[in-house]
Amino acid sequence: MAKRPPEEGNEPEPEPGRVGTTWIWSGCKDRLGRGMSVNVQHWNSAADGQLTEAAMRKKIEAQGFRVTKYVYPPGTYFPDHTHAVDKIDGVVSGRFRMTMHGQEAVLGPGDWLEVPRGAVHSAEVIGQEAVVSLDATRK
Image 1: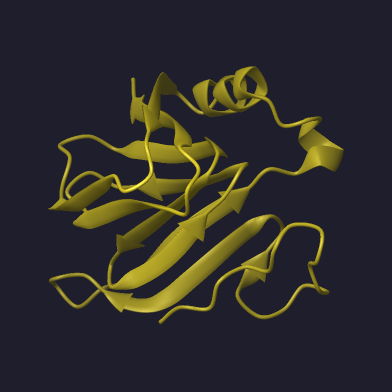
Image 2: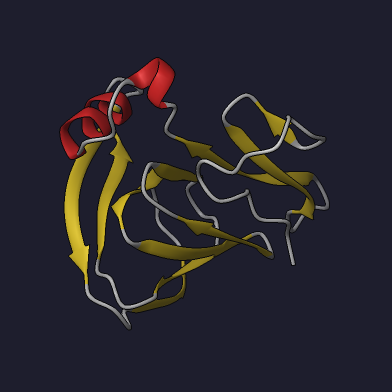
């Protein structure tokens, strides 16, 4: 299983695999044997200000994505699937387990994961709190 980022407010000094506010899981291979990585980005309050739904939406839209809000209750599970477009799954509140390229990441408030078109992935709400998600597709 992939190493997870530390809990917010309890982050150590940068270590291998961490680039700024982006966690990179690597060592994965696509069906052609090319290296792949799973990039989880985390909200940086010092640079981005207070985390709000509106602020996160604005940051994702600035990257050329169209954003839709969804609320997923505890127990929601999306089995392996793909999309025909590049997308981002962002979390405003709650915890969302995402699995892609054989790697797992637990997204919490302020985290988002880029999901390339055609990438097989699954998602699951963990814990007893609903997930408020910003689901974004490339414009």
